[in-house]
Amino acid sequence: MKISKSMLTGAVAAIGILGMSAAAFAESHGAKQQFITIGTGGQTGVYYQVGGAICRLVNRGTKDHNIKCTHTTGGSVANINGIRAGDLDLGVAQSDWQYHAYNGTSPKTFPDGKFEELRAVFSVHPEPFTVVARMDSGINTFEDLKGKRVNLGNPGSGARATFGVVMEKMGWKVGDFALAAELKSSEQAAALCDNKIDAIVFTVGHPAGTIKEATTSCEAKLINVNNDKIKELAAGADYYSMTTIPGGMYTGTPEDTETFGVGATFVSSTKTSPEVIYQIVKSVFDNFKRFKKMHPAFANLKEADMIKNNLSAPLHEGAIKYYKEKGWM
Image 1: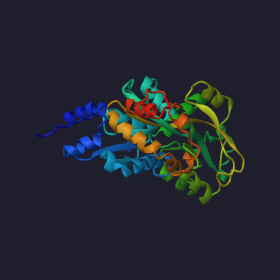
Image 2: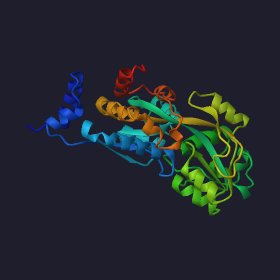
Image 3: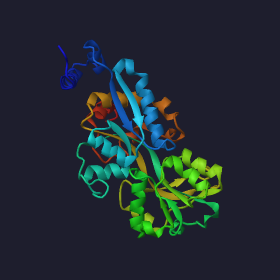
Image 4: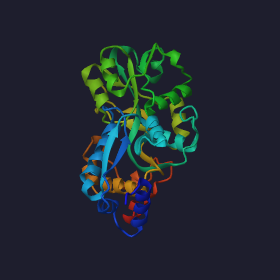
């Protein structure tokens, strides 16, 4: 008898109650490996590293759970839209865009309205809103960006969307910049050092490869983003907070940089089966020490924070199952 995908999915859900793994069921019926795709971000950003780290841990256990993981680039908004369309199984997204997608509070970014099937899996690292300027650009404060050549970020990225929110708060329009570039994260450091732009604006976890490239390849520095309007913006939403980028992390910026930020989160939807989410979460937290060593931005992560901080969509039931088994909920 040929087993259809719908029959297999239903049977997996049923046998999960009996304690039989999805992999054991699939193997006993000659089913092929299940492939999942995670949406991440540009290759020089931390999102790409998050997706890669999770996939490596998942794929280490493929023989046990029969799941094979791959990851692709995109950015927060593109990832959420990809999950909604069924093109992605999971994705990394900024906490602010997780909130807006689930609640339908940013119709310009998510014109399809509330994404009520969106589900949180866990949070990852903090992501400060980061401004890097050439030393010779005349940019010494955040307000100095006006009239300069600035990379706003590529469309579809959470960084670009967040800068749009900041621009609205500051009363800026795209035409207020001498140049409003929309370069990918992998392109922006070279553009800065080739003097094609004066500044980079990027919401990212630290240390970030693209920021290190920019500050070591040419003379550049981080700029404080801490005026009254920014502090008002940060105070007005739970998914924002004022934060600090430690001094000395990057060449040219020996002092701490004050700014605001969001959190990186790992999300999915009700379309992705609880068994798949359970196995992904298990792959990460059963190998948590290994995961934390996969990127410097993960070094200070704590399990207790990851299952509650910056999560504005409901937790996926597959994640809840694992967290309850661990006694965390």
